[in-house]
Amino acid sequence: MAGGVVASWALIARADVVAWVAALPVVAVCGFAFLSVAVVPELRWRRWRYELREEEIDLKRGILWQRRTLVPLSRVQHVDTKSGPLQRRFGLATVEVYTAAGPEEIPELALPVAMEVRDRISELSRTAERL
Image 1 (cartoon, rainbow, N blue to C red):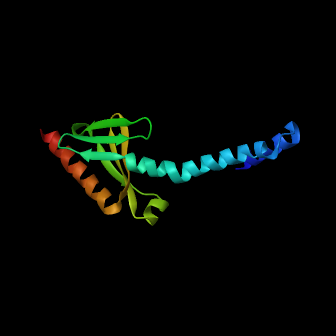
Image 2: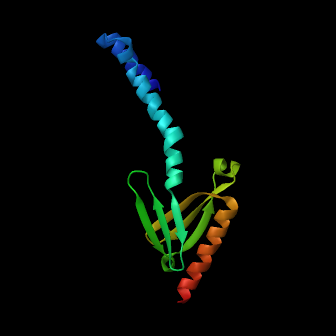
């Protein structure tokens, strides 16, 4: 917001432009802030998908560019749940699945669901090790 105000002031003071042209940087910054806070998180949440299968975890995410990750349960090293102060306030948690390639996350699940998913992944990965 401050950058937009400074840019508008610079346009008025230095370039001697009309007021509505000078207001464009402020409008652009406000529009970007609105999209970042109100629209993008909602779209991200609607596009996030996960599925637990007998042999793998299927993760899909992305708004414009979609990413799909298949995590073989035989490669899972350990599973965690984590929740920050804001997540705890709303009763949410994130499930982290660690493999040799690095962690994958299933974010913003309700706490009982996150614990159930963590336990299910742990159980399925132990079954995958025995096979």
